[in-house]
Length: 578
Ligand SMILES: Cc1ncc(C[n+]2csc(CCOP(=O)(O)OP(=O)(O)O)c2C)c(N)n1
Ligand SMILES: [Mg+2]
Image (cartoon, rainbow, N blue to C red):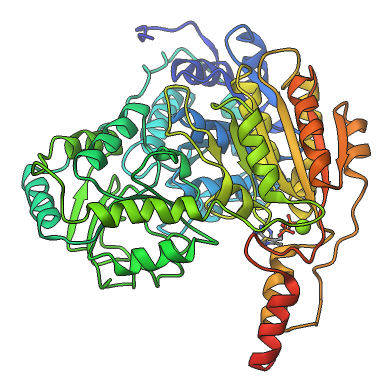
């Protein structure tokens, strides 16, 4: 969209909405507040081009915007009111920060002539969300001059997208939003892309040629479908094994013969050993956080035993934790294209068997001993078999997610976008709002949420948002939430049994009848207590014209896809409890 020299005089709240439209935003998630009525009026004014989805809690709204950022690669937008609204939304900001997701949080602020009095719900957002390397936001801007609003919005989009993507906050005093301006909006922002330096690429090639057991880890944000394709061609020509960083499993085709598995929580022990045994790690995009590095042990911080090549879009990430042997600052789109131009020597490379063994280990890890009466491995494999291949899978935090990550095989990111929406920040409550957002944004895609019983009730009220806006209704794409109810905060119980065996404290849960709860929200629902009951219930959900919830009752004893609670307790007791 081109800018005009002069825009008609209108409230800044309308200009704000025009600026969002100019950035390609057609959906904003939020909870309304009296602090931004002039902007709400702007959404009404431009309702044929943009919609404001009214959510039921700002935590859900912020997760939806974060999911929008993950799916589209452009900043997802969340709009909330001051104080209580902003603090509720903070979980989504934190997730976007840790997950490097572009996102914009708009906050209505007290009127300028009330500032600094601790006026009603007043907070100083530059202090609360103030930028830092361990923070909530890359930038917090407060707009005081309505004529400069377009400048702030354009800067917000640039900042969210460039380098390491992440969340930004714009604070909007209510009198500024209702003041008039004739300022034209600025055109759509495209991020500047950094390319790897040619000398560094030559050095990377030399390091590859010197390796005997190389290993590639892909992760982080800023990937495109063509970057993933280029990455695959690089892996093929150099015959490299590729693992995906924690919750970035959709960056490399999980069926590809070079795929080695996900380097995350509950990692295949053989894969963990392979990462340790590698002599060269090429990390393309991940920031190599605690979950991807097995608590900084698979790669020891700050100086790993393996030779480390770290490629990241943000210069501030390079050298922050790991003293890599070679660092390349590049966006993923450019890095992958550059990597595929590296000419590999002809014929089989010395590590060809190492790569084949990595994939064989991955395949073997898909096998599981049967579990009675309800087998989550079979549940995930059934989802895979019946759901369309471009389905979007969402989850929050909890042991239940381990089965999804272990058994679900994601395709590589395609032109339709990502197929995995999961918080690397480990925020419970993420999966339901992420699924609702995905379903609203891509009504033709099937969206499947897997939630724990603890996880689900943190944001389950967003089922009402789905119903209210027709998510997963009538169209081709379905919306299904699968609640794994083990009547416990199972992950915490697992840690308790390991550290304080037999001393359960604070982790038991009383649960509602989740199927009845879903029906009350206008969803259809099924209760599943055995493996045999799952497939017909899931097939019915896939055939339905309404969103469906499947309530799965699991024994708390089934702790993870690898172990049981009593086994954890036995080992801890043998070790001697504290
Ligand atoms: C917002 C938030 N609060 C607390 C935690 C700590 N936490 C991590 S997993 C977990 C339990 C999850 O329980 P549930 O959803 O029932 O899944 P389960 O582990 O039982 O499969 C908790 C409390 C967290 N990660 N996020
Ligand atoms: Mg649970």
